[in-house]
Picture 1 (cartoon, rainbow, N blue to C red):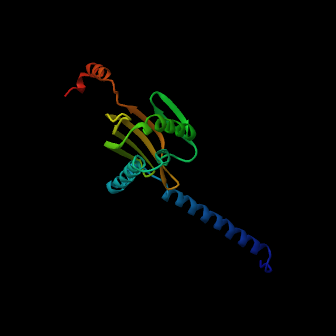
Picture 2: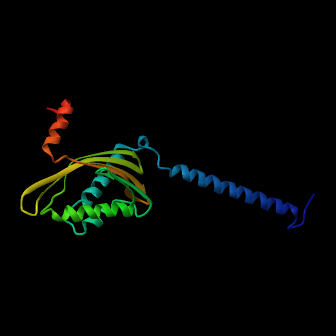
Picture 3: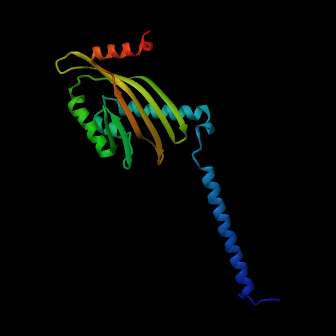
Length: 199
């Protein structure tokens, strides 16, 4: 049976084409989501992993360059501008950016500003790339400087930071810092309790 133009046959044809169009669009979106999924470290080449590690090292070294102005702002540039940030240091835990910024500001006010000619030196940097958008860095550092009275002094410690790539930018979402004990008696007691640490 023939239908006049604009009849039920045309409506069926248009509906069929519309459904096919939606199906093709959905298939394209699904394929795109798989193609753009972050994947895992196993999907990355050695050069890709190295590029991520080099990027993170550069970001950290630049942020901790104490010769640059605005040290608190520079350090805070490593963290996301919103959302949760977990930071543990000195037995204290913070979970938000404002809390973390307050802690960093306090460190700089009571410690950083009293250091004369400080140099932040990274003694080791170990980066494990977990995925194209995730990595963890464990580093050790020392900060030689002069006290306000002109005496040589050094602080240092170890730092582990979990990085995530958000919106094309690497940021720290969790971290833990541990200071080196400055009391030689405590250091000696720790070595006695852990004889494997002796050479």
